[in-house]
Length: 351
Image 1 (tube, rainbow, N blue to C red):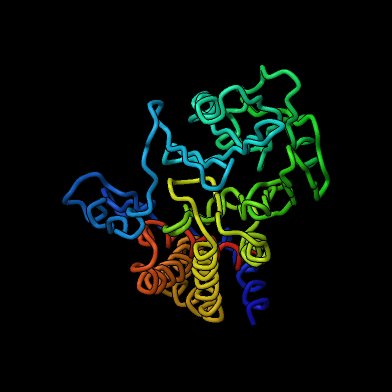
Image 2 (cartoon, rainbow, N blue to C red):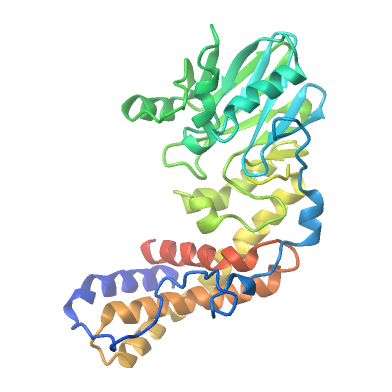
């Protein structure tokens, strides 16, 4: 039924241009983007959004160094680093230090944190979780290290060769799908996946430390960022949770905010994402009925407007249900749920 509705929806999109255009009234004040206002008495004021949940705030990392970072040893030799917005990690071994991502927001300070935590130990390896500059644009601060092995998947190494990104290091060693490393007696497993980036992502697993790193996936204690983190592959994103949970891990680094996640966070994020998906798809058989009702509402004179109204109705009905179910479990659900529902709506239309 979903497939037939999607075909009908696409067919309607194809003929929207045949309808006439209705004129808006003079001086109308409608904001089509529904932008959040900083005015306290505005209908869309920021004051209407719920504060972050106390249980999430209690888990937030605290800045604990003189150079403005949180640095903590979560397992012997394995350090978690965050500036409360971005995250990375590094592993100290008998052979040298392995760095996992370097966001530009704290690339230089990351080197200082490594030196403070492991004075005199050389940095020998740099592993990229993916090529996006917001997580690896600080790599340039490691570029002067002689003999540094920079490891990345072939797919984004090829992409970087065609379109270099400022600050992102070019891999010196690549792999197609899997790579098993051993640095100073510590095993590191790398596996390609498709849950976010437009070319490929890399799952980083340290089995001895029960550590899993998959960047731009979940935000522990919170609903995901807008549009499920802006994923380029919604189906891959939805399927990724089972992949993550197939690993043995207790620590989960997802790249954003200040909280280091755990297995329960991944399970909760999976349940939330699947709930959003299932809520939209549960309403999908009625999509075309809603659309035709809105065509009548606009007197068959503005097909694009009728289609947007329909999309927003499904999105808003979905968001209301999701917020009601999740607002006591995850922070910022009321801030991002509409974007999650809209992402699924768009995916349903096109697939």
